[in-house]
Image (tube, rainbow, N blue to C red):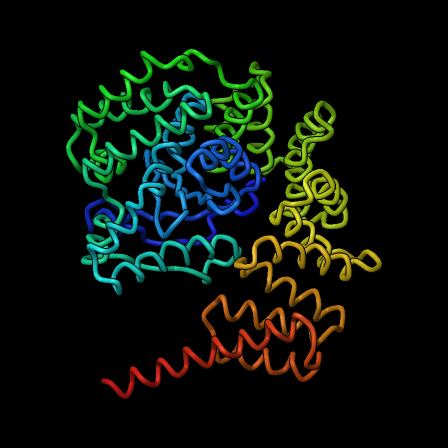
Length: 455
């Protein structure tokens, strides 16, 4: 399911748009296990060819209808949902990923950062990654930020690459695709789409055109590679074709009004992606019974698909049928146990259920979720709630300290860390982590005091 695509973290995100327009446009970071895993599956061979550990590359989704993707803050690739929805095939996404991976591999982020003041760069990246982390919290107040004026210009500068860097990223992308024996036709097709954008006035262009300058030489270079590569006509695996169609349909159905989804994916279309989109549209109308009938039909056809089970759990949970939601979530986790988002969904359902021993099971799944994604504030907060309701005060205080540390509430984090230490004692890995929290809080407090004395 789009676990938290219900527009969680609202920021005024002014990347490559005029300041006035930027103030009017609200964009949100979103989380979804299926979309993130699909993009990671597409990108893993590219990351490996670039010498990157695939699990270390973060995939972040920004709910924005424009064509854009960019890298920031290290190995973080941001995708606008508009790019995914408007892509015509998996190859176009893979081509864009290969190019953005070229920027990472080429060290272009470091070079750009060196050209800016450290304070400005760090503030912008903190906003980007903090807001993305906030999307994992499920709470809008966790990471809101406003970017206007000089910050908008700094962001545009940070994300923009020179023509020489673009050419270098293209060259690396071609090498990565050749090494993985994959076609570069998708990137060429994407460049041709962007070529149509160049005739538009700046305010109407998609941001990718303004942050990634497109030249005839770049297009010619990629076209020549496509013409001579032995892999250009190689088809994508059928399962990748389906995965791409599914995430397109899923994003569209969650973002657009249900009536638009039902018009686009008509009842006469019996493709799996179309039926998936209609199930989501009915759920959002809301027409829960029709939605459940639709998702049950998909589950019957694909009983080992974790994302169909997850969507059913979400449908039931968000319509007040908490007890019924637990079983589908359990099934989803059983099929995909390494997904932090699926375990989080199950943990939430268990907290609200009245099943015997539900709270202990919730702490197990939420504990695994924070081990998989230790920066997920919302998961830490829910883990604290589960421990608290299960009368485990020491662990509740520890989890709350982790949550508050990530939320930037350092005095409160220090208080709960001390409380956890008093209850749990001075031994084990948790005690060591508590010391880390206290030390971090102390360092920030000392830094603030030095700043006050300086001014």
